[in-house]
Length: 33
Image (cartoon, rainbow, N blue to C red; front, top):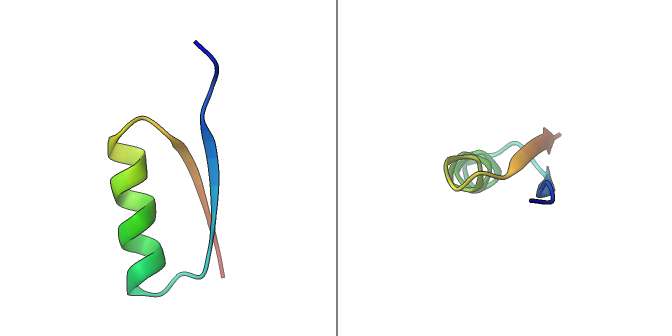
């Protein structure tokens, strides 16, 4: 299975929430601020 990688730009409440939800669904997440 190919890895699923996501970069979230912005570490505010929205970016952190999006990163957490994506990580729970199996994505490899990098949050940048």
